Length: 151
Image (cartoon, rainbow, N blue to C red):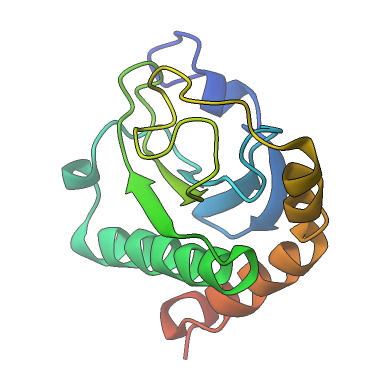
């Protein structure tokens, strides 16, 4: 629940499989069979916009986003990364970190656009098999940030 008492999906639920939980944010692996490796970095407190955070928290959050991006690139080896903070449907600060492959269902359009093709199930399974390595890489990249370790 938000401070105003209204319901918020990201306050009421984790938003996916939590693969890293820090004091102020969490990294979740989104359950999307079409996009193995799709992660979200979710600010734990109900905040609507980046500019609502103090400068130190904005920096902390962006360091986490870039750490997740580096982990996803390292493990999933996408053709391109999509990193976005939209929040139109859920006005709770969160960033989408999405690996994109030339053979994915929507490429080159956004993942929220019309499907361009059926993704190859064998390729999706190959990418899904990388998720254990991705979990470890996210922990390594995000936890190594001096902002997150307190160093």
